[in-house]
Image (cartoon, rainbow over all chains, first blue to last red; front, side, top):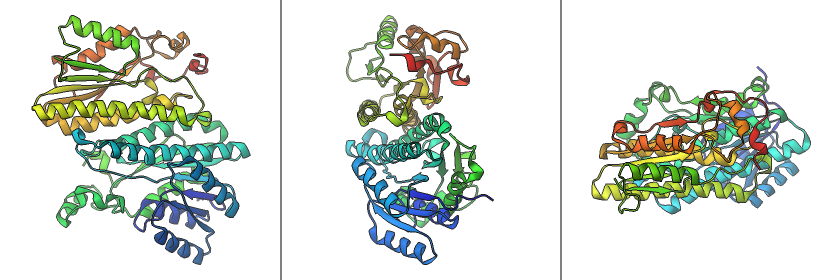
Length: 258
Length: 200
């Protein structure tokens, strides 16, 4: 299998121990990529990840930046270029979630989720695409979206809407950047027992968790690296002709809308 | 029914107001039983690589404004234990990618999921939430007609009719769906270069 070896990958929102970002970083590192780990919090968890990666011979760097802050994003790319080289692969994964009834959505929640999940994704991928086009290099962009793209989840209107918006962003970017040999796709994880989902009412108690995860056709949550391996496929030479696509990694969740 | 119209493209706003008034609806009454909310005028075509932060932020501000309007109407309906209707109006690029139309596609897609979640949550209360994809109308370039199975741009009255249907008793059992009133644009492949680049 052809893998994205020798490339430089930037993964946003990748510090958390149980997060999808870390699973993506591990999968890309296993393919021979150098990996830049971005996050805005959890510097200690990031340091631990960097140590593990470097101990196994992976070129790895932690770059702290708030993706919703465009100048900080530009500086992040400069730092990655200086330490690892120009970025070939961007996994726009940073995201935040909230659970609120539709009629009581808080303005602050709305603004925060849109800023991180949407403007953050725009900042990172537009900067990446501009730099790729400037150097005439092919590239890979993968957004972490969600099963929310294909089915609504009550009390998560804003989160789901930001993911649907990323679906449209993916498709528009794919159409415009295909001639530049930049592919743009998105992956749709189902349940992962991540930091983000710790606040989910559907995983609150052990009984809630059994009920929620038991309904998934696969009968379990995904390990972050299982999502990561799907992303690694989209980042490799095998997926050179795959663009504008949605790859769900959900254990069958959406097929039956469980 | 008391219907509130917000942020609709001006030609659609005028056509829908005419139609709803002819059907006897009240467009100024408060509290609203129904809301038809859009994203304003379609932004001009801009390359993704050139899209400035001002245009990006303006597109998201439109999506947030529409969500807040729907939330406020929903909150009023929930408080009054009244049934109601919410219709979001979006542009074609949200359901079929069109080069240069990031600032139209992103907020439009955002609202499709807002509608679905609102439909799922508020259905038990008798509130429906749906989306109308409003096909291309003037001032969009006539050249788009070549990519539209019906071979012409939309008349604003035709888009108003789609919105009015979703507000009517005939649509009582319709919720969480997207009514694509675009002459078939979403099922086609583009014919030649995208004419929107020449729109201004």
